[in-house]
Length: 364
Image (cartoon, one colour):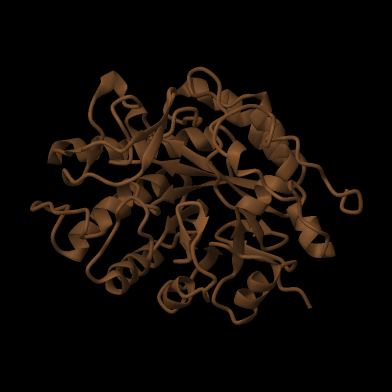
């Protein structure tokens, strides 16, 4: 019996199968960071009856950008384009939540408003590259946020969630993984603050919990998820005691009653599979977080079935294979061969490598 194709619930979301489309940065928006008809086609292709799509990471402010071309949710003018996308997904019987994003220090003045420095909990530079309209640029030195600036960013998360609700999304997910701003506050390798947002674990978790509460205030706890990467090192991330740090975060998020926790396994660094190892992050947090848990990170059909069968996760998010296989749930259900993905078309561009991957004739 396949566990992947049994129904489950994530908060108030009632879902027909456990093949989740992971958030995938594709950078195909139009002027004004607005979603467009090409994006509508892309999401519609990947919607399935009873399936859950987590949208690409969507900045909640211009300051939150590290990748030019990502669609935004910081302006009311962006709502109409997103509404066309959510309508298309719903027409095919699927559900879709928006991933809310602020990259923090993973940016560059070329991408920031008025050419300003990126912001972070502390003035510590990350290794890696963002994407400007001119191409890849190395992450630059950030400036530390002033205490009185933080509340405006929390409010921007709440405003983004409220716009997502108007746009017809079924919920939102806080992107607190992969070294972005909530993750930078949470881990002590990137948070050297001496105020009430730094130092102790409860202080370092404060920003994550506040932005999650802002989303809850807009949408309700049963329609809010959070993504964490407990072993992630991308963007020069580190923590002196990650097991305790992420266990604490998971327990506090559990107490908020959120719809689900989305956990990235350590075998993924950025978008690269770095090791064929057993998933361990979900197993650790499963004993702490009592709600629905979605695991992500290099899964195929067999490993997805395995983690579901032992109960370490309730659903599995697939990324790269969803890029190349718009009908991925059907292909997995029928054990059909998968299209290979073209990495050169992942970030930015046109329909090539975006909406031109074929649907299998037997799955159609």
